Amino acid sequence: MQRVHDFLKEAKTYYLATVEGDQPRVRPFGTITIFEGKLYFQTGLIKKVAKQLEENPKFEICAMKGGEWIRVTGEAVLDERIEAQQHMLDENPGLQRMYKAGDGNTAVYWIKNGVAVISSYTADPVTIEF
Image 1 (tube, rainbow, N blue to C red):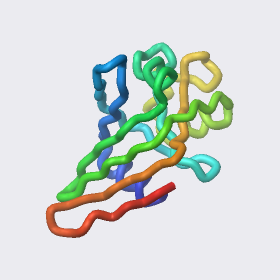
Image 2: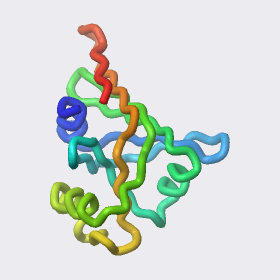
Image 3: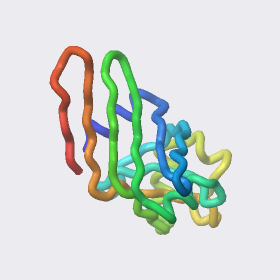
């Protein structure tokens, strides 16, 4: 899991895909952290992505850095604890302009049944389950 975290941090931007009805939806993200042994990402509860994850928690993330790319699949599990929200904000200080722990909008999700595949044109894929 640490390797997945580090890849996404180094890539700086990753793309998170959800489903809205029968339409795929993809948007850029940049927040990622490890808290209590789980990989987390963040959004706002007022955003459509939160509503999409509530209806269908399955998602996919894709990012590229250098000559490698990563695809991460799993289920997003909302963690409503203030401690998890604050940890995300502490690890990603740029969020603090828009979010506060316990504000009723900050949403942090941990990745359940996570599977990441790191690929390149020059090496065999590496699969990481977490």
